[in-house]
Amino acid sequence: MFLIGTIAGTFGNKGDLKILPLINPPEILLELKSIFIEDLNGSKQEFTVLRAKRHKNIFIFTFEGINDMNVAEDLCGLSAYVPSLGFKELKKNEYFYHDLEGLTAYTEDGMEIGKIDHIIKGGNDILVIKSASGKEIMVPFVDEIVPEVNLKEKTITVNVIEGLL
Image (cartoon, helix red, strand yellow):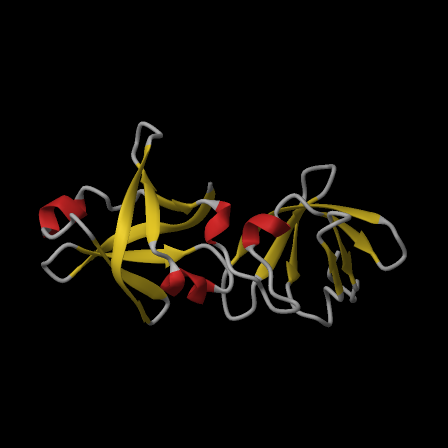
């Protein structure tokens, strides 16, 4: 199972849920037929998607069986997952966040920088790389600074510009 987002709240009074995406590209959420929601005990329940639409930077979902705002409110703050089979083929230079986490970052000279700990979403996504000493290094995830991502080798190459490290 892959984490795709968190339930950020309800939308309207008919039980629709707002999901904040944690995958890139987030539009993949619009193609999902079902989503698993993990409760506080760690068990996951599958919900069939009746409707999904984008609204600014979140996605609004209507699920079968959730047609009351009170029921929907109980799901707020929980995590949403899909099995890997639900993903589509990505275009060149598109990656799922979960595929990038854990990759080892190297300079163009071959010096190890550290491992990608997590990604901060924004106008330009930021790779947070943790060095062996535990220092967090923030690297803009743009082609000029990260010219190569090699998922097979589990590495990325970073073009180190002045002040980056």
